[in-house]
Amino acid sequence: MQILAISGSLRSGASNTELLTAAMLLAPASVEISMYGGLNTLPHFNPDLDNPDGSTLPEIVADLRSRIGGAEGILISCPEYAHGIPGSFKNLLDWLVGSTEFPGKPVALLNTSSMSVHAPEQLIEVLTTMNARIVPQACFIVPLLGRRLDAQAIAADPELSAVLRVAITSFVHAISSMQSDTAPLSVNVP
Ligand SMILES: Cc1cc2nc3c(=O)[nH]c(=O)nc-3n(C[C@H](O)[C@H](O)[C@H](O)COP(=O)(O)O)c2cc1C
Image 1 (cartoon, protein in one colour):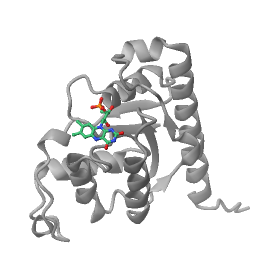
Image 2 (tube, rainbow, N blue to C red):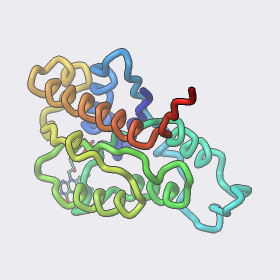
Image 3 (cartoon, rainbow, N blue to C red):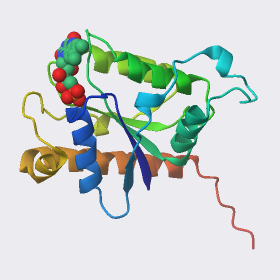
């Protein structure tokens, strides 16, 4: 199963990026989590560039949409800035609003700070409006604020890794059951 991880933080050594990297380390062999690395280079969203025929779509945005389309689920970990979603991450979401690839996509949300409550609420509102299928049983707070742990340290921590493993397993199960719910009915032809 292919899962795309997207960190909402551009900061080097960001706890949100380290957490997602730890999830990559802990994923079972049947699950490949890849990290989206283009957040820093996406242009500002402009509807003029988002024509229905795709002729004006920047190549990097087409690449983002293709990665979204190729993933069976999206794992997001995003910080809170000034009681809101960081602008660069909201910009990424805005590029996906008019896409065919994003609607209906299963999404799990991780949060590295129990202090941040507004951004997670806003993310749920925005993602629901974009027709994401948020999987609540795969959404977790993994408290990393002020701990300066890198991905290896997170993956080696018994409590943190246990939460991450539950998040991954719950997400994979939910995606699998969504896929079997939407699979075409087989008909036995004698
Ligand atoms: C500009 C800025 C604004 C912030 N505003 C908030 C906030 O409103 N509420 C909050 O809980 N944390 C806030 N924080 C703290 C970050 O959410 C927190 O440090 C987070 O762990 C950063 O994630 P990162 O380590 O992945 O970069 C803010 C941080 C910055 C840099």
